[in-house]
Length: 353
Image 1 (cartoon, rainbow, N blue to C red):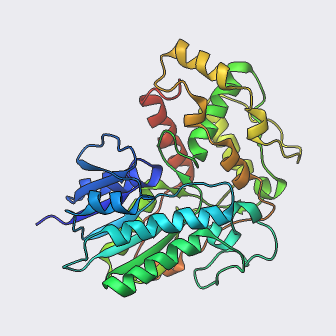
Image 2: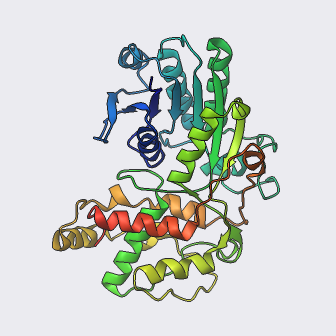
């Protein structure tokens, strides 16, 4: 009998990749979102997780073997992030019928567990890199901690196992996503090619020259499924990245080459994409109309604020995956290939020319 999964945030970068992998592996998949999109093999579940009663109603007939929480809502302050995103996890887990068989809940957070929230991103005293799971929480408010605590409390109450997954910046396909570096860079490169503007690295000298890593959405989906199906991985928190490391001074040239561009020389000056692209919405609409693209709204494709936050860090950020490796997770994904695969999908789906 096929196992049943509930993917929360199924229309997002991580959720859609996870749902697709589960379908391929023979799972029966329910995909929850406020406004579900059509996905092959996925049964849509429409629910607003901020409405506890409506969430319980939407979930009352579901008894999933595994729940994958891949969603969050950005707010104007970290206090609001904690209130809203903690409530979403709490309403979800309270709304599910109590499990009548073993259940696993996998929560996706990220490296802000170590770096701090956007209000204090990469500031103050930070743990040494590579980041390791045994490094404790920072002494700051952080909505990731609130989400974890809701999972831990519900697990103690209802008896399910859990895992926490901390990716670095995720590369994957989703329209309307709040944190989408791959598509943002594809749109930026397209605009530079259109206008002849220099393809300028927007971030810090530390990011340009330092080592870093990233997480492909497919790699993260494989990690989520592995932890769900591996007893030794239950009730554990994990970092999850592609397995390679690179410097942006190399990757920037690789991305430029894919788009037929010459990368601009980096002079050490931070030039945020949010500022560079502030007036580009009308230009993107003209490109989309001329090329017959599927999305005319630049803001539904690009999230320059998030790319600026990642590429503007003043410190080198690399991530240790020894914990997963020791327990048997050996999947590997070259990051340049992950970017190129995304760009090809964007072009095939008529999201970039």
